[in-house]
Length: 65
Image (cartoon, rainbow, N blue to C red; front, top):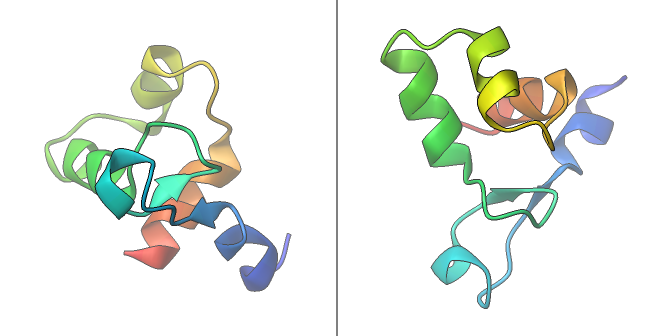
């Protein structure tokens, strides 16, 4: 999956999460993912906590951040 494909997973909509960048329009923000990873949460733990996410979503969030 290329960089552009990954970044296409990030969406911004003023009606979702006050316009913050989110993953595929879900109510999960790039900021949430970044803060979790910075706080020591593993990718596997994030995927367990948010089963609607895919590993590529986390890659996209990191790339976007």
